[in-house]
Length: 269
Image 1: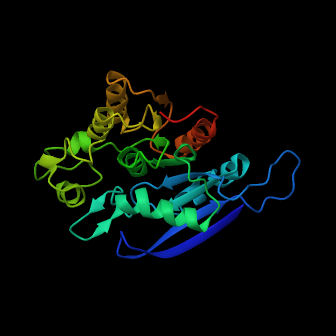
Image 2: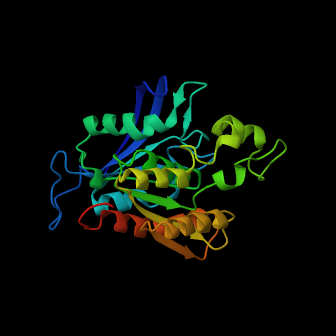
């Protein structure tokens, strides 16, 4: 398993940005393991949570072992506490970087499949929101979404007033990141609105896998989003189980989620 640290000049971000890559090309000759042909490797773009970094999954999870066993490349950019959405005022287009530029750059650098059905996006907490939002916004890129303990806070911060705080961040932060909170519902930062647009256009909706712990402080918003998906008849997997907002829960579920993602299905929805 090759682990690679990359810095490159991003047009979307207007600066040099880092990412960590796991590329299982250097496995020893083991009976039953097929060599990887160039352009054939499935890829997961895996996002960190709030206050984390692009090394979190390497340090705290079993992602390296999973990537090697399942023969999947894993690309881990940094979210920088910005929820993976565009900051047009600063000219730092996190969503465009993740949904277009990073995908194209890594496909040119590594032997990755260009097939939408082989290209996944996932994350935890803030990264779970980023995976859902960008997986839906760039649905032509991503065939499957993995979202663990997703910070679907758009439900709570939409139309928030000055003085609002959720114990993690406050009104000024959310307004800085998400823009006018009175305009949030129905925008391209609203996952429900993104699903509705895909359905209206008749565009394919990525397969979605969600999981959240029953002791997680984000359980209510995860239940709300899966309820919406059920109401509009969007097929998805939703798992609840014992656990809080911790690496114990995410480690328990990332393996199952990856097995689901790489499983043979005719195509993504």
